[in-house]
Length: 265
Length: 357
Image (tube, rainbow over all chains, first blue to last red; front, side, top):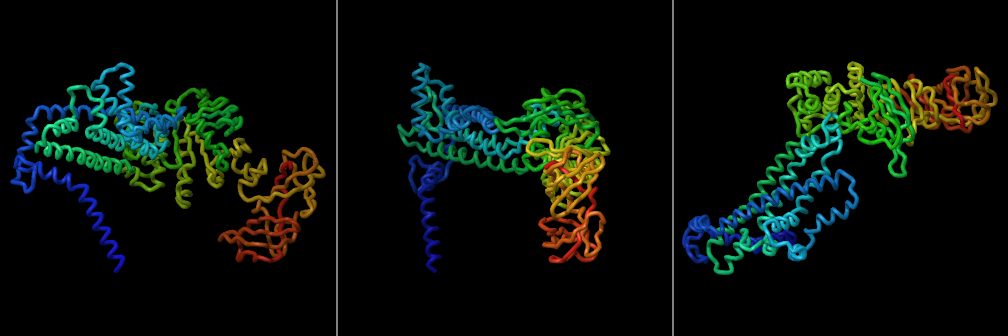
């Protein structure tokens, strides 16, 4: 009796916590379909007009393009560097291995603001101006640890003797990498890439510090818009962002599952 | 097919010497087994032949050509691992075809060779499957097919049977030997299992702590161990301290407190050159126990059975003979000798081996 009561209370409490966390998100999503000009309940009717207006807003479209290019490049560069670094750290003996590993993972542990300011000051000292390349570099540094962690975990599970077998059959080390190691690593590489893309797409703190004047990503654009007024367009934009940042990793996870099931784990 | 020749090869990992100056010649088409407990350097030696490890010193020749500086992918070797090491993302046919693709073999030839290889390992119907869909024994056959389809100069087998369960292991042992004889490839086999080594090899190299203890045909290594390590590692042996009091070209005389005076042919102790303390090696299965009359006339003593380890067709007895504790393995006629029984233990001096103390 008593125990059943306790469990009911725990369930209730958990539900309250979830409601607390997700209610604001749900409100934003709901209001994005609101027909009325003013973001308030009760909703006056369902409409897609804010999405249409969003699609016609040049500043937002530009920000979208910037975010997607930035995210894609970040993902590409991060996974390339991440795979190479993981290979070096796991498959070969590198002097100072632990130190390198720690430095590569460190950006996760350092508060983002600190990292952002540090990079900015460093480049200031070198008298390099803010640019898209700098923004990209910042995002790569910031996403690299996630890629490395995912790829390393997978690489450890790929048996060395599979690669040795390939080499004994006549494949040189580069051919072995592309025909054996990379296909087996692919689920982790894709997952890492998606992580990098989502994190970059979502990032605001670092981006605010690093972006050159005139360049806006979606989060900084929302931030700028919020300073003027709370337009229902922002609700629509928020909904799109939620769909992207939640949907992409889920999609990636599903693909990675399928692929690793096919390659026998 | 090629000979493999190792000359004074050595492998050091920092201060640790994994393989001490080892020289070895493996004849063309031969089946040579590197046998020893884990850590004896047998796998290290195999990996040096394969090109997966560089020797710290010495020469490796395959087919009369020095290969020290030839990377593994240019050595043309077939390599089979304990854990199969099949490519999990490729079908069986693609696994087997892998090596052929790097040898410029045409598409139709690849298909034919893959089919022949699958026939050879008696798995003609699995070409389209993935490795995870096969049993352990089947996976190891595919690994073997993949290694031999490239017609390697040398086939290297690194404990290929150890991951299989007992019954399957014996079947695969016969199968592996049949395939090796059929294609006649020079084979280096690494194992810690003495029965695999004895059953399959033309030549056994017994290794311990990075050194070669003995090389020779299975019968020779088994019947005439060259060291106490070999005697203990292969089969069950009794090793008794003795004193050589007399030695000439044909025979030597050994004195022991418990077994008395034994006259042994000199060729049973080729390493014993002078009189003095020696070790007498007595194989457990060479000691015959009987209820009354001794089986062998020459050396017979009465003994007491301490413990009986019943094994079905045979039994292992732990017996007390004077101050000695000995093991004897005998086939069981009707019933094994019971513990506590008085028996007559006898053996032929020609079945003993004498080693320097």
